[in-house]
Length: 413
Image 1 (tube, rainbow, N blue to C red):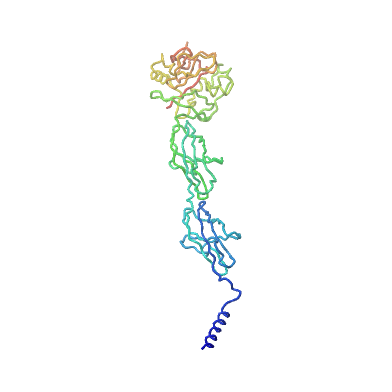
Image 2 (cartoon, helix red, strand yellow):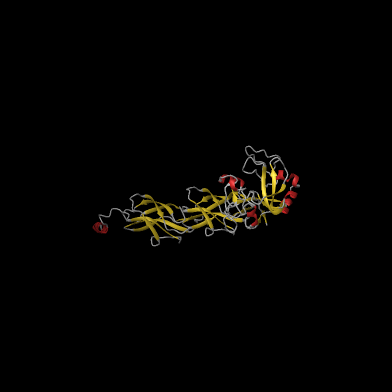
């Protein structure tokens, strides 16, 4: 009996020795890997952090992350590998679509096989740029619009600016001004607008997703008039009349014909043709005081901008009536701006007409303007004109030689 037991035990030892590989000291397993974090970084990229906890007893052949729009991604979907020897690393995923939810897992492969970490998800940014726009100032032909990029939508802005139109919801296909400064807040000055016109504007910005627009801003340019030379004039409404608030300074008729120019010293020299000139020989006075014209320019009917005309005696008198009569209208029309050497008695400019003294400081007038009417003085045909004197508050009418130089104020048709 004893011999039989010993024989059986010996067979078991022989069997155990034959079934174990003496070189296989540790049982090989797949690696253990952990997906730590997964975050979208833009409209097309994300970053995933990975930790290799164990290689499973066999060298890791490949490691990285895999992802898909399916909830359980594998390396047969999409993957990015990491060739570093580190056990903790981050991987950047690129080429994603905006505003899409993705699922991602860490993976590692050794001789035994591939293992995966936990599934995490992230949603790429939508790429829409968040913009804000405001109007800072408006005048007759310009407007300043400020823009602010509140968020770039996760993708760098490649272009930004302001677009505008007379139609609602303007786009960059209408009109635009691009801002090239490397700032998130910017201001653009829109020029070349038409007077008394309603416009729509909004900020825009472009990134990899496309073009985004801010809130629509509406503004109306101030009332005014532009002559054929591009000079811009403010206007004022007095009663039912609309007048230019500055003297005319155009050098071309509205059909494009040049008005013959003479020097200031020739302005009151007898001539039978239409001429104009500056009060003195400098463009500064032209801008401030306007041009001077003889009466022959008025008779062409082409001096005023389209939609405007040189006023008649009746229209001048209506202006005076609207301001309380000729005896007091002048004070309400005279600018209160002080010019050195000039005493402008009784000036209030309460009408907004903005009459200023003529350029020559020796003159006694705060303004002299042609009318379209004519009359005879001592049998000589003369042109009618209106004046305001520096030491008076009245608006007076006179007759003058047709070649004399006078200012022009236009009235709206």
